[in-house]
Image 1 (spheres, rainbow, N blue to C red):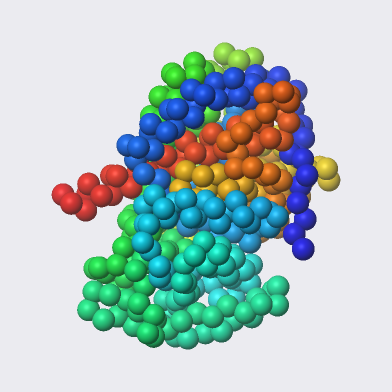
Image 2 (image 1 turned 135 degrees about the horizontal axis):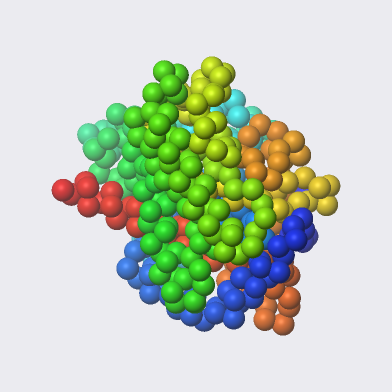
Length: 431
């Protein structure tokens, strides 16, 4: 049984008034916000699914990561499964109305029971939406795996016939990836006639956080002009360094200069708003996920003094992917805390442009300035009773329904940035 947070975690900060002002502004401008989103989705169709990690500092609410291969469907509130199924059906009716057969391709984490629970839950939601679903194994072999919940997950062996993939006599019309391709694109998937969602270019061998947040910055500026707010309140400052070799201590000058430049920009905004918190940055691989290769820094000079253990930790990401391009992102404090006083950050899930809900990533051993996507984290579902687009004007701005609306606005903005990324990939593929 999944325990669900009935209310949003409390904000442990003296800057609550600033957030209440932002949340109230989003509620007041709901009509303008929703009209703007409708127009934007007409220009740029959304990805099939995504999850967005947010940070709530009281004075700032911003995304810190957007995942196009979300792996926590098992952590969503099971009471609202009908909403999730409806969102899948809505996406299909818009973009794949005649679709019947889908092949779901997960990561090769056959020893990670919680990830496999995610795959099983995702397959179940797709089936409830009216699709015929098979789960395939990129290892090429049939497997039947036992799940921590007591269920079983069947992974089908795959075969390729010319430019089409099949699992036995099951011939999918569409392939849905739940594998971020950090290890590269398997030859089995190259040149297929069947459409693949997300596209192969969304894998971390080619995708870059800096590209995503450049799109997000432009969209945040556009929306901020529509609703008359400072875009910094919803947009983290960032810079990028290339040609970094942590093990050989190469590229340190670039890191020092750009970390300090981001910190200086944060200080200017903090001074403008009278914020006394200490500015910090998060330095991480420009490509990659799973919270690997991540470091909190308060000055650029810290990178002149990294010991070998720290350099080794920063040198590689998931699947041993070497880190040479580094993303330097404004650190956004998370002042949300559970009833047990553990630090928490919201993770919002979407199918298409529909907010499904989400969960809080909670870590009892990490601080408000640290990466929470690390061993020791656990997840507590949010109590989204609706799809996150219906604020209540008669309730205070920090009521759960209104806070979740604010989360949904920022998460949709991040997913729209991902959709703009996909446009870039399409242009590059046809160049």
